[in-house]
Length: 300
Image 1 (cartoon, helix red, strand yellow):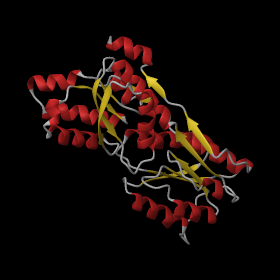
Image 2: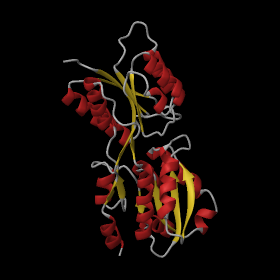
Image 3: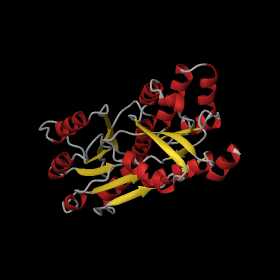
């Protein structure tokens, strides 16, 4: 039986969901008897491209059987082409790319596994319905523009957001530090004292906690109390972080997003063993935490 070598390229170590992606892949690799190497791009698309090309084009190192990656910026089409040409399988996670169909004509497995980001957004819109039933202003902190997940989550959210909720949108970088920075900048604006904000909704839990900590540290008195009394909502829902923050009432709600890395690894190993490539795109389903009906009754 072959022992396969798989390379997993993730965006950053400074994000609990990426840490979960790594842990889930490591567990799956142990179970499947796969040699797994994990690299982090430090949120730098050029660095990620260079890291992967150095391995694909190396004349001395043993090449992996497949590369699984969550792209920082673009889908790295040229890197994908180089990998496939070198006989290396290719899996894109959490990014919609338009080159897969063509590359799937080659003899190595090529496919995508992604969270259903539009459904994540739709669930957040429904959370707004329950948390802000009378309408009002919501601070909405998105992921970076370079991310494929961020605009998809926004698009889904707009499909279910109540018409009487107005958004004040800002952009973070998926990290707690960026959520803190975004809110710190917001508090320097006069509009921060004029808006009657009813909730803070973020596209991941880390930014939601960073936002909450910024309001806690940068405001005082009644203003501080007002900011800390409104609901904060995030996405990812890891047991030790997002779900724990909901259980301790630091967050009002989150959305559990299953890790894609283990599923992608299992699909790739099966494809290598059988020679049968999976369908081009597989979506994993998110789950609101707590359930929407409980979120509504809790606020009531």
